[in-house]
Length: 275
Image (cartoon, rainbow, N blue to C red; front, top):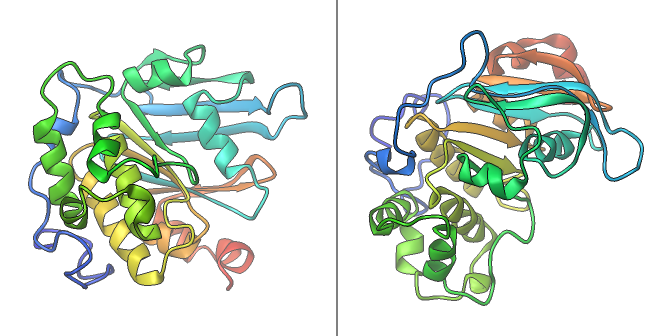
């Protein structure tokens, strides 16, 4: 990527995997109007969230996750720490018993996930995140289901971001590699022109080279002003690109800081990053 400020420090250099020259502008991904963080609060926040699934025990215990426009916020922690549950709570996939979720100063705690998509939130689950029998292009068209305008320019931007998808646009998405499927899933979410893009384990099951390439693309998306909230098992690599990091343990905030701060924290490194 020619103008990526992270390029000197990290990232895959294999030009065959993605768009080697950058994606250009992604302004049309954003919804119309100037979105501003609420005075005194982050653009998106799940504030002091406590809750679980159905009538089961609480998984989250006063957990707070926040991200500003243009930031990459990463949630890491051991297995069973409640990472994906925290993200699903922010997206409205479980009821909170305590706490609130606010987007651009508006309380959206009671909104359904579908309503949150219309408010500007895009969510890419870890699994079952594409329509395998449909073509790549049909998957992207499905992502534009809430759009009433001409979405072709947005589709072109997705193809600029992930050039391999243009090449394979007529191919069934189920025939793609794992990394290419993830590109389809992210691209479909971008078709809604989200203000917030939420990614649950986007690099699960892909090679280190593909992981680096996906992270590079995520950086590009964030640089357009879109909030990125991401759950990742590859904690060290994710924190390297994170503006903000949250380490969860048993559904609670254990450590919070910038990616660099957490990488430099001896306790975090010893307990969660393998030393």
